[in-house]
Image (cartoon, rainbow, N blue to C red; front, side, top):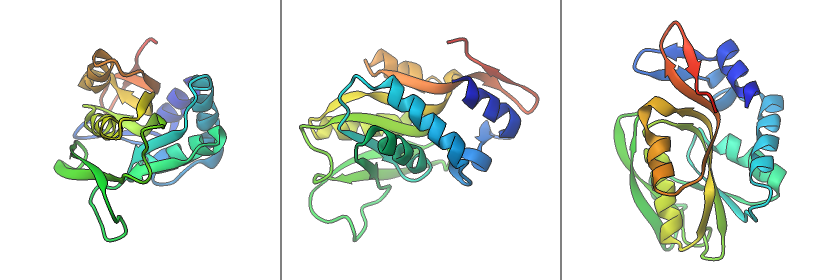
Length: 191
């Protein structure tokens, strides 16, 4: 999606530690007009798949997932990073390592919200090493639901997570794919 690439170039910032800051438009402050066009693109990509649920993980992917869910007319479920008092009953759970925070957590979803009859689209803001999406794939598998694929706003291809998921048979669609980046240059993949 050329629009995502242009937004990254004009408003994104590469920080030390291999971090791309897009908080100005995607995951802290949300550019709602831009988010709507991104959601429209996601809906177009998966229009023939019969999606019944969108699954994401808290918290940065929630806005993108909700926008896509609104356009597609399907519920959005988000995995919590810890089982809390407002998550009652039986849950699906998997351990996920956060690249950004350098920590492990248990992602949980109530069994009431992810059903065997669902066809699930995963949506998240970033794909780097792929740990968050691998965790979401595991949650879908635990529910015996069908996985339609995954959409990410930004894939850092050089970190290999997307290729590992594709090798495992998961359809992965980035809206922008970064081949390499540093403080001076961001190079996008040729898709």
